[in-house]
Amino acid sequence: MATLSALNTSELLYEEKQLYRPSLAELKEVIQSALVKNFENVTVEITDCPDLKTPEYGLMDSGLGGSPTLLELGGPPYLLPLVQREKLYNVKEICQKTMGGGKILAVGAGAGPYPLRNSNCEGIYNMSISAEGQLKNGSYTAKVSGLEESCVLEAIPDTEPRCALLLNLFVCRGEPGQVLKISCKKRTGHLNFIECIRQGLLEKYQDKCVGMGGMFKINQGKAHQHVMRDFSRTPIVDEHELNQWLKFYEMPATLTALGTLITHENDLDLRLQHFHSFSNSNWGGHYHYDTTPEIVEYEAYLNVAERVVRVDKPKETHKFGRD
Image (tube, rainbow, N blue to C red; front, side, top):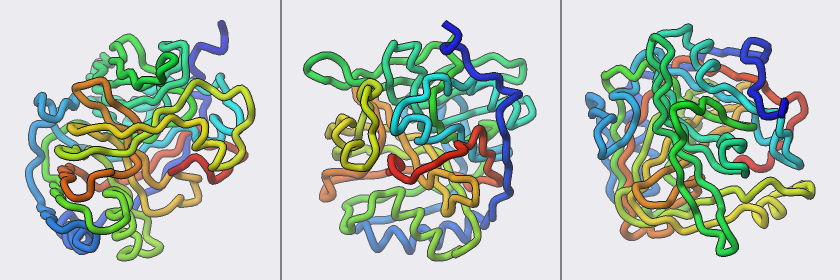
């Protein structure tokens, strides 16, 4: 069926902007001061990136260094009010075009390749691409399954390079190097972990656009996360209808979340924050907030991006479905 083949990578619209890139030393202070308003115990430090390929972290390459880039494909207008099924992308090819070849690590949050599951699904993207172009997938889909509507997490095979509709990726060379390590325990404020960081950056840098990406783990506690049900047959036109359609779960630690955050839409209709998590159990989905503030423990490794690349930006847009 023609609609199941990915769009031609070379024919998509690519837009690129440089981002303001503060030093890690400066970011450490900004993020620390933001998080202490929201968590009782906070440590932010500049550290050599641990080997993220170890089972503790589960990424497909070791580090978050080397031309760190935010990459956004498509967007919620291709999903809502009604799905545009032709919006299938070859993530591998788009990353290669964005990075100009070479070794690549791409991690982030998007819609999974629905033809693979014969259903709409969340995508938790964790890909390495060798300099020779070989794709290794540590990615997952999460879908709502059966009458009991259980969450089902399934690995995406190395033979599947696609995503559907929308995707936010942190893309780099997977090289070792310095990153920000953030540890937080006991949430006292109302902002979620990522929103707290993003708001702190926004307050500090005002109209300068700062973007970051990487991973965080919830090592203790539980999180409120959603998984999209299969595509709606009727139009979804506002947040209330959207929340009726999404399936929400309380998912237990340990959860490993991958994604991006940015302070501004930057005239590119960007999604400001987007993280999806996977686990060693059957849980995975879109992170909203933790539900266990007393005991929650976060551990994050983030790097600051040099630029943002926007691919196939919707011509007609709307602002719902972005939480």
